[in-house]
Image (cartoon, rainbow, N blue to C red; front, side, top):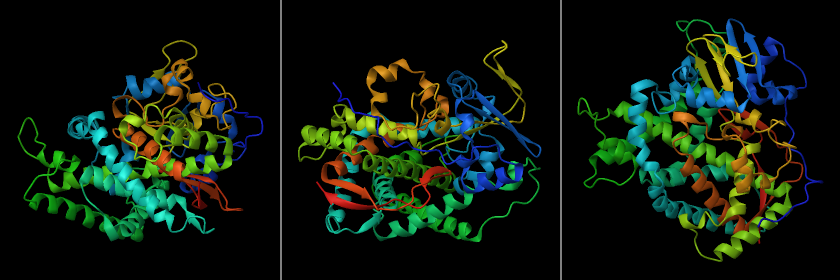
Length: 464
């Protein structure tokens, strides 16, 4: 039985968008700085919104059954498309997030066993061990009144977890250099080029930020060193990297080239730490804003776990922990926007009068950030209320009213990994510490590839 919490005085999580439709110039400028600001409040309860920028049509779809069609039923019509390749391709190459067709299906099959729940039972121990390392580091600064950027701290934690669980590598002193390189790449490649938004020809040249080019060289150097070291090792590893190295094409018997390995390792490393780090950052912000939920969480983890290190089997009994984490992903989904390209004209919702005609060549966006705040699906959507994720309420909702990890064949391969990692880290940190937002620190969500706090998240660390 869950505790009933009074919601009447809870702060609302305000959407930062402007209360009007922006001009084309304003739209382009806003998309490059913070995509979620381009959405005025009135789009949140509309089934769809249509916009044309230059030669390029854009459709935002905000209806669960149509979202299901796009992601699950019609993946051959709604593909990743040129925009995705142009934005992420220079950094991620032809990895799982950008590849299409037969090659993508092959790579997905190779990587899938590394994220099976049986494997997660083993990896959970490493996740907990890494979190204990963070806690030991925080003991030196707890109760000092010093404020640290929790966004950076969570990034450091999840980067270490990904390196050790997927690649059996301790990053050591290189973690800060690697973290800076990844942050630079996200900031640069996440800003949609104007030339792409206008739908101009692919043969026109695209310019790149020199700083991003240097950051990419740093990332490549570290990843290729990881691959070369493993190839030269006397004994094979037992991780995802080894699975990729051992994989063979069923038709030719050939393994992956270093270039293919590089693309998959970079994709899994970058995507594997960034989203969970943002989710944990937002959850600690929300707990600071809602001390009643913080108290319920602390009571659960202390009663269920005591002083011992938690493992995979502890996750199911930690129901409040799960509900708080899921509600955070509702309000602040790190993967806040999913873009697809209509390879041909299509009609969503069938041939009836309520259907939606999608023109060939349109970019179709389904946005967890928008749909998760749709008042037709979520009463009082701007209020933080973990009770929404009690089992009976989850089962009563349309599956695509809530889709923080996407859906269909291209659903995030690491969704189970991220939920295991996030909930374990949340339980262990909340058991030991209370995090308090620095007075006056501005908090604004910024959508660039992932949903980040624009100014970081400066917080003090207090022992329980």
